[in-house]
Image (cartoon, rainbow, N blue to C red; front, side, top):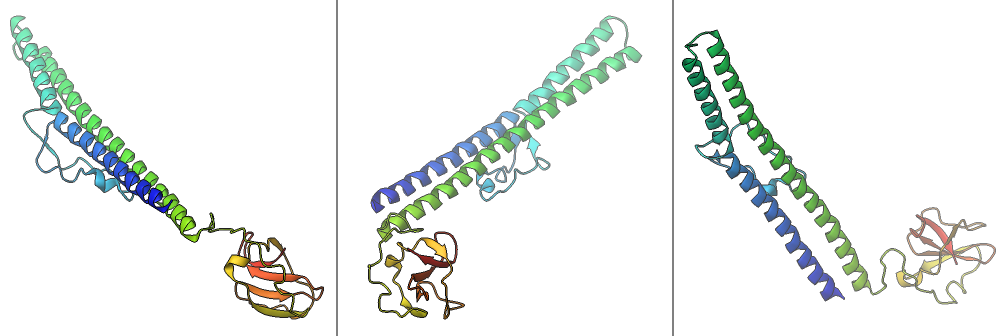
Length: 233
């Protein structure tokens, strides 16, 4: 079983790395489509691992190709068309021509802003995907580690092993006195939490401490299944 769990751990780790790579590829594609140039190493999906947020776009620059450049080219075409129409109608550099040029500039700026906004949103989404993949991987690793520990313990559970204690445990302890430490593997039968009656009950007993109440009931001090305290069968 341990070898199967180890294999699952390795497979899951590979799946996480694949998810991280997919997010990075998507980020790279977004940067290329927008036409971002220069150092883009800061836009690494690995930065999302551990809860890191997506970087801002304050220091990026755009090249001659890509969505940002195309937005300005489209705006330039609009401005050129507006100027041509103005000249053909004899408007020259008058107020109406200026208004058309201003409208063309506004359309250009909006198009460029839309490119940046879409890029910001797209990178943020990929960082969110990478963060979720990391969170899922940590949960999966914890589950596998627990299963491996259970397998190594050979009990099927490390939280509440159901191992019956010998019938004569505490038989030779006089009522109102404490005995030795019951082995871990023999504590499972003591499940009913309560308080030993009578005198001589230890105030700060170690785990596994045996005590026989005045009525002859044997108790064992445990920290489970319902928190630290005395348990009987």
